[in-house]
Structures are given as C-alpha cells and as structure tokens.
Length: 133
Image 1 (cartoon, rainbow, N blue to C red):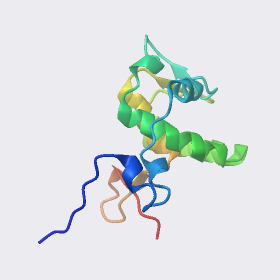
Image 2 (image 1 turned 90 degrees about the vertical axis):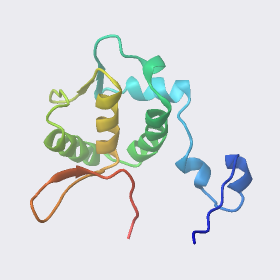
Image 3 (image 1 turned 180 degrees about the vertical axis):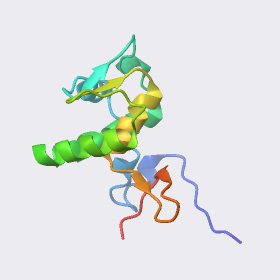
Image 4 (image 1 turned 120 degrees about the vertical axis):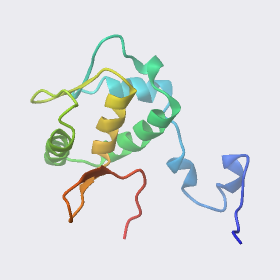
C-alpha cells in the first residue's frame, strides 16, 4: 500500500510545503535571456532563449540563485569542475559553448554540482535529484 497525494495546482500546496514553489519555479523569459547572456555562456548556432524548454527553465531558476551565492573563486572552481566532468561540452578558458538543450542541461547540472564519481569503479554519473544530508 502506498499513500500518495496529488495536487493539481502548485498554489494549493504552497502553504503546506513552504519553499516548494521555488523548487518548481520556471525561469521567466527575461531570466532565461539573462542567464544565456552571462559572460561564461557562448551561444552556438541559432540556439536562443526561445529554444529553452521547461525542464531547463526550472534548472535556470535554480542556477541563477546558486550563482548569486557564489563568489568569483567559487565560480572558477565550479567552472573547472564542469570542464572536468563534461569534456564534450566545448569550453574556452572563460566560457562554455551552448548549442542545444543538452549542452545547456550539462552546464546547469555542473553549476548545481550534480556530477559525481562512484568510489567503486570510478564511474562518472549525473544526479537527477539530491538530498542534503
């Protein structure tokens, strides 16, 4: 037996679960454009904010909050971490090339530090969700 609650509207549960609206908030068009205009993002091809889908808009909302809490040294550390885990993501010394949704997902996952290596087998993985312990 499983007990599950389903809610049709996020606003219905916001008063019960404080902060849940931030977890599921999508970045606005202005926030998406702001993120893509950051100095460390270099858009490739014809990719633009209009091409960003819902899942990445949610990640952008989280990443903007995360970046606002980083000092410059933290940003450099995280960008080096992304380059280490995502060699397929084209990067220069100070920027990442974003040509499609997958490139953007990998960059955003790196900003949220979602990459890890298993202790046995040293397999590199991406955590789809996290729980702070």
